[in-house]
Image (cartoon, rainbow, N blue to C red; front, side, top):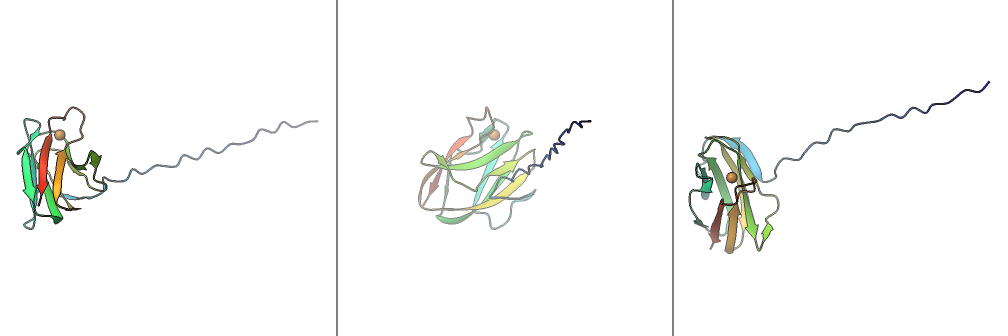
Length: 126
Ligand SMILES: [Cu+2]
C-alpha cells in the first residue's frame, strides 16, 4: 500500500509595519513657542506664503492645517527630497512639528499629496 504524502505548506503572512514619516514629530494642536518656521496649508490648496526665510542650523518647523484635507510638507534641495523629514497634517486645526538641519541656501517647500502641485514655496536659509 502506498501512502500519498501531501506536503503541508505553512504560509506565514508576516505583517508589514509601515514606518512613520520620519522627522515628523508628534501631532499637536498648538505651535510650540520655540518654533523657527511656521507654514500654513490654506483652503486654496496652497501655502500661506510663496517665500519663507529662516536662519541656518537646526530649524524647528511647525506645519498647521487651515483646510479640511490632508497635506504634507517636505523640503527639496537641488531636486531631491531632504531625507528623514516629512510633516503631515490630516485635518483642519492639526499641527505637526519636526526639526531639520539646513545649511545656508535656497530650498523648495512642497506638499506631495497628488494634485497639490500648487503647494510650492521657496525657503531661503541664511
Ligand atoms: Cu497639500
